Image (cartoon, rainbow, N blue to C red; front, side, top):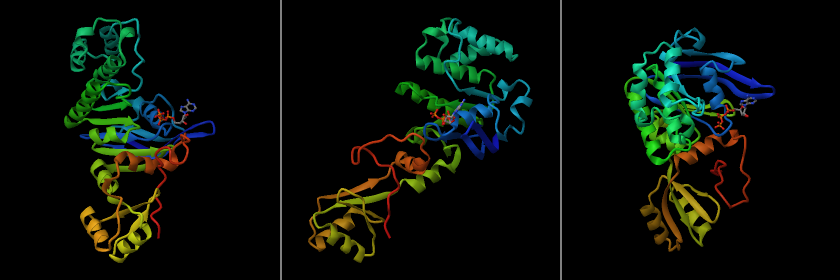
Length: 316
Ligand SMILES: Nc1ncnc2c1ncn2[C@@H]1O[C@H](COP(=O)(O)OP(=O)(O)OP(=O)(O)O)[C@@H](O)[C@H]1O
C-alpha cells in the first residue's frame, strides 16, 4: 500500500503538487490521471524519494522510502525508459542493478523472459526501439519481485500489440495481489486497465473513485434532436414532463427518455425532425470536463472548429 498525506511540492512560485492525500491499495490497478502538467510525474518522483516534498509525507507499506532496506524488493518503478546505459547490453544493464541491490543473477534471465526480451538480451540497448526500451524498463521494475509497482505513462509511443501486452501484465500483477499505480493522460486507456482512479488537476485531487462508479456517474446517455420547429418541439417535450436542453447548432438534448418515445411525441404533434439519435457521453469527455478548469495549457481553437470541453449549461 502507498499512502500520501498532505503531499505538496513547490518549484519557486509554481505549486506542482497541492496537498494530495490518498491511498493506493493492493490487488487492483489504480490509474493516476491528469492532463499534461497536472503533477503526476512530480508526485511519483516524491513517492520514490527522487524529489523532496515541500510538505506532507509518503509511506510505502507504512515506511518512508529512505527507511526501506533494499527498496527494489518493495517497490519497482518505470519512470523514464531511456534511463538505461546505452553502451551495455540489456542483460548487463539488469545485472548491474541486481548486483547493486543484492538480487541473485538468476532473476535477470527470469525478468528478461517475462518481458519477452530473451532473444535480444545480449544486444546493446542503444539500438533498442521505444517498445523494447519500455519492456526493459519494466524488467528493471520487476527485478526485485516487489509488491508495489509504479508505471509513469507506460504505453506512450507503443504500438497496439505493446499496449495490449502492458495492459495484461498490469492486470496480472494486480491479480497476484500487488499494488499497481499507473499514470496516464488518457481516460480511454485507463477505462480498459484500471479498477480504481485517482484524478488530479493542477496538483490537486479531483477524484478518488472506483472505475465502476466513475463510469456509472459519467457515461450519461441522452437523446439528441434537431428540428426546424425547435421552439415548438421544446414546449411539447416540457409539457410531457421531460427537460430539453439547447446544446447549440440547433440541437436539443433530453435525458431520461428513449428515441421511440420522443419520436412518437414529435409525430403526435406533427413536428418535423431532422435528427433523432441516442447518444452516450464518452469517458474521455467526462474526464475532460472534470479537469477542464485545471488544464494548464489550453489549445486555442476557433469557435466550432473542434471539441468544446466547457461544462454544458443545463439551463434552469
Ligand atoms: N524541476 C522542475 N522545476 C520547475 N517546475 C517543474 C519541475 N518539474 C515539474 N515542474 C512543473 O510542475 C508542474 C507539474 O509537472 P509534472 O511533470 O509533474 O506533471 P505531469 O502531470 O507529469 O505532466 P505530463 O503529463 O506532461 O508529464 C508543471 O507545471 C511543470 O512545469
